[in-house]
Image (cartoon, rainbow, N blue to C red; front, side, top):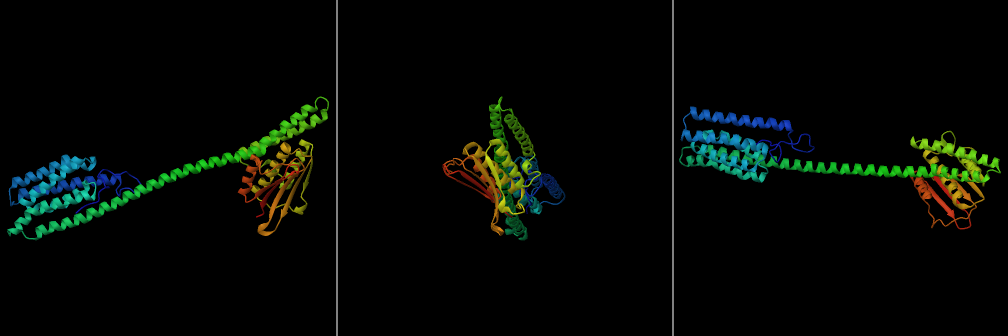
Length: 415
């Protein structure tokens, strides 16, 4: 007969390990106490039985075998349950086999201790392949004496037979338990691998989130603060050029500088707080685009116009995210006009096209400047704008050619 070991090794299990040994650390300590007490009780009963009843063989030999078994458990077997010392384990099992053989030869009535002996084998061994030969050796030692006595007619057949039944039961239980424990260890290894993979994925997702956030902040800075500072620099240069002769023009430029600086400050605060653009806080998209175009005209001196004729009476029904994409698209297109186009006029059109699932709202910024080849000059700002548009299911289209002006179109779907 056997009992549940704490794992494929006899050491105490790691408490709380997922998929690990079936016993907790406290459960394993209780099991050890039960093993020690059971061995002491059965050994004491065997000694008392030898001292009280008549013994077929030499009483001194039987008591010596029992004493040797008890001493071996105290010095080798008990410590081996915790230390996992191979030398102690093998030494104790060898002493136990010899002691059982002596006891079975001289006093077969004491073979009730085989109940404990079989269990100790499976508690001590590392693997099922190690437990099988020791169990067979123990059964052979316990059967030899009674079998000889049976051939002489001095022992009934049920004595060796019961030992062999116990052997079969012990082998079956021991092999089954070790197989269950091996599967438990495999599950524990799999769980550890899954937890490690989950931790790696968490780190990867965190890193991806950091990269995405940096990209978002870079787009926000490029579309707001950087363009505002560019405007301030240009306005400061024109104001300085107007002084000291044209103080009225210089004052106008300084007023615009203050306005742009205040908006930049508000945009920076909104960016820190992860709010929507300041231009959309208390205005519709069309109103924000009109103010943007008007200020652009004041900054650059170019002829500007906003065309909303195709919208009809009501403004487009868009989410805040879609409005932000259209506003940032207009800001980027106007910033490119200021930096590169050398244009004399700019038109900003807001239009709604299609119906149903195909409906979309577009913002077009068209200038009469020098133009360029879009296949050659992609631009960081336009690339970021395309990323913005794709996030809401929209798109960006750039039409231009050298000497023919430029038209930038940003469109988003109407949900």
